[in-house]
Image 1 (cartoon, helix red, strand yellow):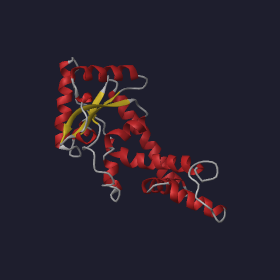
Image 2: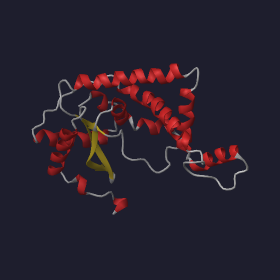
Image 3: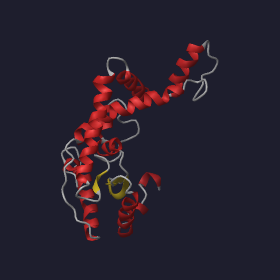
Image 4: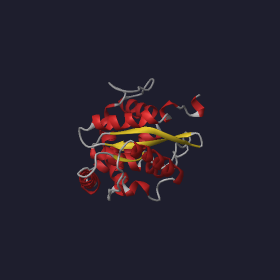
Length: 225
């Protein structure tokens, strides 16, 4: 149980649900101990440099010529490129493309992208230090329950912060799974289980054992009934 996953960033109601889930794992024989992932707070800024950079590079092919949406009746090649990408990408995707293009540009590559990759390695080392003493890392999947559609489009930072407990796992390249663990105001809460490299079988087995003694995975949020 990483101490950094149960700090002031976590909604109190979510914390209670996750703690109840951990108690179920203890009943099954697991021993819960506190561990440290000291650079968790750096995962958001690092991820949102690395991920947009990859986004900018990967989505550059969608120009309306060979891949992706093509605008109707383009006036020339430049119009084809501009309108196809303008029409084909949503607001958040455009934001990430522009951010990624910026951090990969000359003069900013070393200042942002290279530093983010160094932080990525530090975060990975944190996980490896923990896995010397434990088999599975458990905690919340998100800081709170799901927000409403388009609720945070104008506040992307707040939206990104909800990824605090998952993006560090992505940066480290580790396997993880989110299992249903309860509801808050009829909205589902997930408990995240993180395994070491190539330990997917252990990870899936822990999730399976948890689901055998709970029924949250069989329940459906009210809006989908």
